[in-house]
Image 1: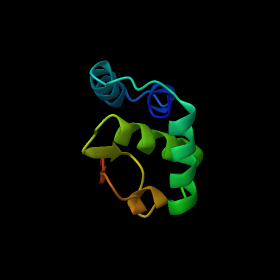
Image 2: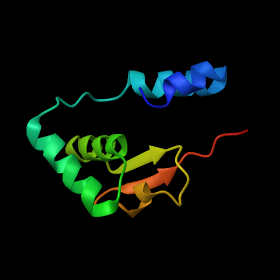
Image 3: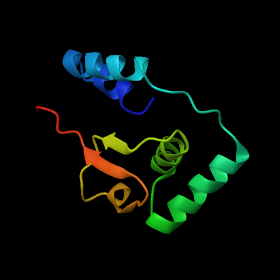
Length: 92
């Protein structure tokens, strides 16, 4: 929901195709009050935006070993511990 609409809006077909292939294989994690509470704690601990905290918390809950993002490595997302954060560098 966060990255695909932007790629569609800016008419970047290669990026859209990449996200569609990736998300077709993604595991779905059910939302629970406990996970949202954990995301809130992560947000407060690392200075994260709400969606970043939710994404990372759900990735960890799903057993992900790494989290790939289009965020700049200077963003608070890269402070998070317990999972490897990797930037996805896309061609301009």
